[in-house]
Image (cartoon, rainbow, N blue to C red; front, side, top):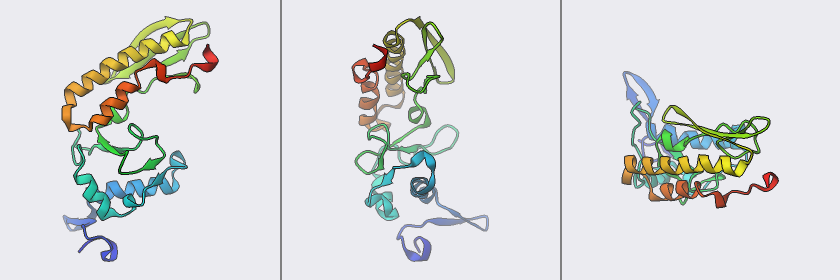
Length: 194
């Protein structure tokens, strides 16, 4: 039988060693539902009507690149709404499955929330740096935030190429396009720093 009270046609749990536990698919779907209904980090994020139906979501997911793929650690790839979409909705047109490396791609050390990723203000100058594959990289200092961010973006572009070479067609092509787009300094408004 399917889910709770037979609501879903796909199984939502399985018996392992005498214990009933949620299937990995149901746990992933359920996580989307719960985080959009109560987490302060997901305020304003919604789930499409189709994604609210576990059976529909599972059918869609099985057709997506990366669904069910595993990290080296054995953890499943994440479903991401931010890379292709604008981060406000879990929807079939924008969600993609990606490994943690892509999902958390190079979080910069901004230091101040209004600085671009990878840039930190050091009193008289801006420094640029990031972490990639567990290693810290420093790109230098400048009195110009655009220049410091540009150094970070050049490195980010190299990382996107590296990621594409390693993951190839196991990841939705739109992910690479969006990541490469994020390396273009013309997509950033440096407004207050000009």
